Length: 256
Picture 1 (cartoon, rainbow, N blue to C red):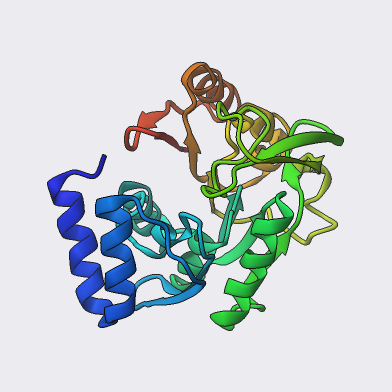
Picture 2: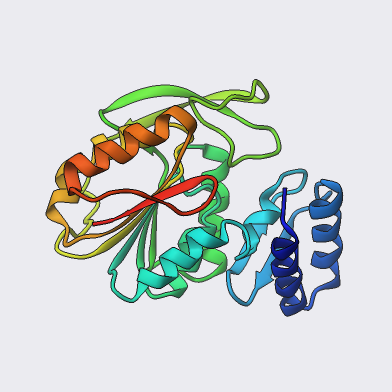
C-alpha cells in the first residue's frame, strides 16, 4: 500500500516527465492496479530511460519513488564509492540510475526474460561502458537451480518465492569470490552492493566473503525475507563486524 506521501512523490515525478501517456498508465496502475496494455519507454529525468513490458509491473521501476529509501541511502554514499554491484538486477533500473551517479556497475540477473530487458535498458541509456551485465545468479557455490518466474511481477521471481504462478527456468549460480579476477571486478575500492535475491541473500554473502574482506568498505543493502533477514545480518556481521540497520519495511543495510 502506497502512503499519501508516497503518492505525492510519484505524482511529482509524473509532472517532471511531462508525458500524458505515462501519466495515464501510471494513474491506472497505482490507483487501479491495471497493467499497461503495451510496451513503454518511460523517460524519467531522474532515473533515465526505462523500457517497461506490457502486462507487467515494470512501470513501477521507472520511478525514483519506488524503494525511495534504498535509493536515498545509495545516493548518500555514492560520492564515496567506486563501484555498484547489483545482485538481482531485474530490468536494470538501479544500475542505470547508479551509472548516472558516476558509479561503474556490475549487474547480475539470472532470469532470461529480465536479462533481455536489462540489456535493452543499458543500450537505451548509452551505458554499455558503465554497466557490465551477467546472466546468472550469485550464490554460495557453483550450481544450477530452478526459479519460478512470475507472469506479471517479473521482479518477484526466484527459488524461494511464496507464489505458485508462472513457469520455471533453470539458472546458473556462481560465487562472487570465484569471479572477481575473471570479470575484472576491482577490490581495492569502496563499493555499494544491493542484493535482491528473493531469499537467497545469505547464499550471496557466503559466496562473497573474500571479496568483502578485500574491499575498502562500503554499503551492503539487502532485502529481508522473514527468517532469512536475521541470518543475513548475522553473516555480514561475522565478516565485516558491522551491525545491520533497517532501511524500510523490506530492506536492511550494513555500512562497513
